[in-house]
Image (cartoon, rainbow, N blue to C red; front, side, top):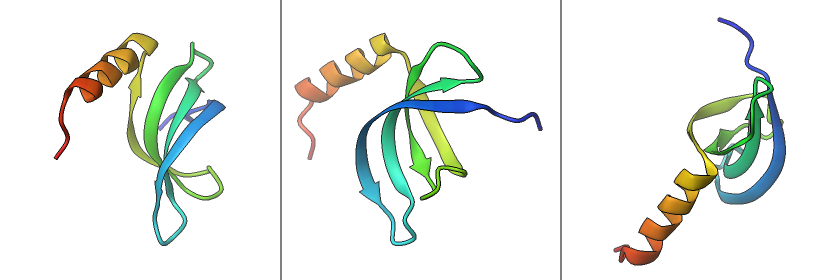
Length: 74
């Protein structure tokens, strides 16, 4: 498997932390030198390991925000 290169440009927020120190974070990340995207995933404390996640463009993140603002969460 090819090496995945990434650069965390901005940590926007930490949603939670597991007892082992892994954090679920929303970050702005450049993957393999490409334009940065918003990224939601779990990270090991040293940021060397990561879980599966989802990446969103600025437009997709804005749409998600609008959906969440209009949806009653129960």
